[in-house]
Length: 184
Image (cartoon, rainbow, N blue to C red; front, side, top):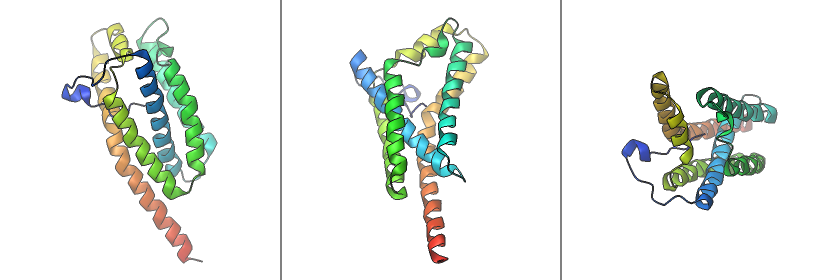
């Protein structure tokens, strides 16, 4: 999941130079933040909460990512995203989300909001990612550029819309808890 990188939209240079170690650390942190933020939003958006359904959503997202990479970048593009940092981030994010889901709802929402904000900060302070430029170079001009631009825009903006949605979910959760308490 992209996490609100606005540098391209505003033409801002990366604030730090690329090093493999620095980029891997940011990649791990951003992945953990995205999984916690998306996971809590997904969890509280379900009528009947299910860890299997939540995990299936993440698996489907990764399958779509791999599938689109395979279609758009010939010769092994399906797994270009699966860097050591991304894989460690997936494992760490899964563990972090598991812990967050066991916490009380109020703390869960606060940590999800913090994760979204921290993820946005991380990607905007990160060195440039060499992966998108490698993918862009492999594509030919045509309708993919319009689709690519749209997906980049969605990737850049979704966290800014997710935060108010998370707050709305928290308000709904609070109302339903109060309603259940009033009926006792």
